[in-house]
Length: 356
Ligand code: 13P
Ligand code: SF4
Image 1: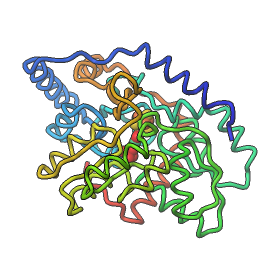
Image 2: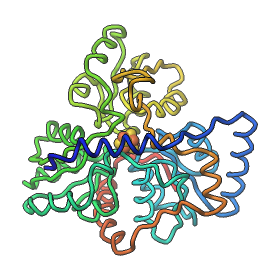
Image 3: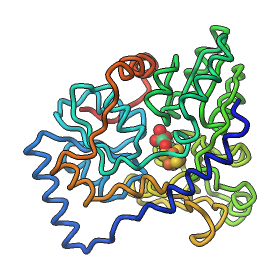
Image 4: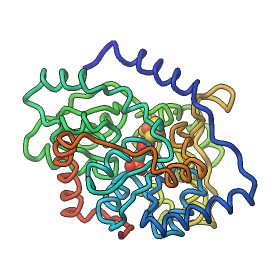
């Protein structure tokens, strides 16, 4: 397990965030003009936009209006692979763009910015990870999708949060021991829920790590009838309080199905756009974080997801810039564990709402 890495990884994240400017605020007219221009160019170039639930609502709406897709990481990967578009525009973070490219090497994959990364990806560099795997050859290597192409290529399985429990259960039933990376909270949750024998890498999501048990406990007292829904990247104590733990899509589904009219949500607040669209009669409340805007790093909003903007999307489509490139040999290696996950999801019939 990497012992010395976490503090310096977080320092890398902090330095990175300090030099990244947020996108500009747009007037309504400017926004409408950009949307129309992007939609027209997409039609001309046979491009489709795939957006994650944490991105700006304007990108989510544009994706749906233009025949693209909004979803969780698993669904984004599947849509990207199955669509017949020539250009895939991925609004999300870099690992999502890389996954799309690995699964569709014949497509051009563009992103509004290639700098949109993820603290989990940063905290799992290939050399250290590979050495860790070499030390434990008896373990099946299972990695979270929030990793680089090189880390995926070194793995036996890639999983997203919507399918991680099923894969771990499947491996545990076969008596296999697991080496898990990088998210220690998701890993701990899988270990506890399935009883699988797991060795965990030490990294965390800077957004979900800010959700706090004590604050959530106090909030529950204020809203005793509310359901608590949490993403499994949150700390164990927060997950203990949750009524439902799941991926972004599983959170949205639970919010629609539960009878509670108030729902406390422990994940990135970008998801509120879809939650409010699909369950407008409900009151959604963000779970408390470590601080407020002045004192917390993310305040329940991923700073890298926030780098995706209409202006950047337009520039990348116009110039076909910010292309995601993955070395073809690496892509071939990384495709195997990714395809394995997608076939496993199909065999389980893990529901995917999008069709290409
Ligand atoms: P989902 O697969 O649940 O959308 O999660 C991706 C992610 O990065 C959460 O922080
Ligand atoms: Fe990574 Fe966390 Fe951002 Fe998801 S929310 S992309 S896990 S930093």
